Every structure is written in C-alpha cells, then in structure tokens.
Image 1 (cartoon, one colour):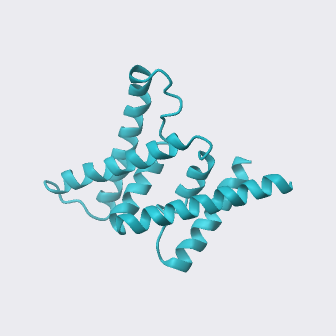
Image 2 (tube, rainbow, N blue to C red; image 1 turned 90 degrees about the vertical axis):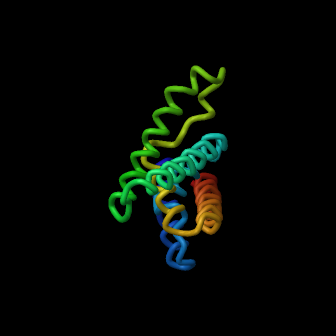
Image 3 (cartoon, helix red, strand yellow; image 1 turned 90 degrees about the horizontal axis):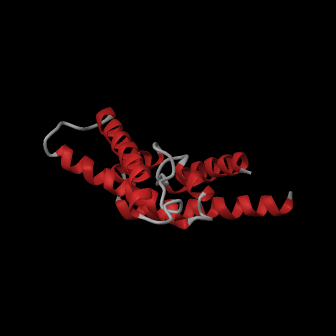
Length: 145
C-alpha cells in the first residue's frame, strides 16, 4: 500500500499546489507524512527537524551568501545531518526510540526549504491538509480494494 499512498500523495500535493498556490512542504512530503500518521511522533519529529534545519539556515545566512541552489543544498544538508543525529542519539536518550525517528534524510530539508520560501503558517497548514487528505484517500482505497 506504500506505493499507492505515495502516488495519491503526489496527486493530492500537486492539485493542492495548483488550486491554492501554496506548496504543502514539497510535492512528496505529504505522501511520506501520510505513511507515518500511524506513528504521529515520527511526523512531529520530522517537522521539528525541518524547523531546526530552517533555524540553522537562518543562522548561517547571517555569515554566508545563501540563496537559490546554495540555500536548497544547505537545508537538505542540515535536514540530513539532523536526521542522522536524531537516529544515532535517540537510542541513547530514550528507552523506546523507535517512535521518535525522522522520516528519511531528504524530507526535512525539502520541508524546511518550503517553509523558507513561503510563509511558515500557510505552509504548515497546507502540509497538514494535504497529508490528512492523502491519509484518508489511501485508507479509503485500502478498504475498497
């Protein structure tokens, strides 16, 4: 069902972006968040890492010239690095770290990039909306087939 959920998420995110003009954290992000809604702490961990990646970018942007491709790469690198840190550190900090994991290494950076390009609240609201629609459509298809 993962395959179908990803395609449903892509379609929902694309339609949402076309209708509203606001990207829901990137075209692929709602699909992967919808796959993890059975473990909501993972979705929250991913959003938290994206926000930290955005903060790292803003701190680096004070001292470096970061725009365009550089901005995008810095956010992807920060998201990937923070994801790896969470993956390595959580087993040592928490007794049950399986819940508190980040979804992939690219997803937080993509989300952080959209949070920077668009306004923060509209991006998060569109992400939540597109993720919920994807989750329910995938569940509906799962029930029918």
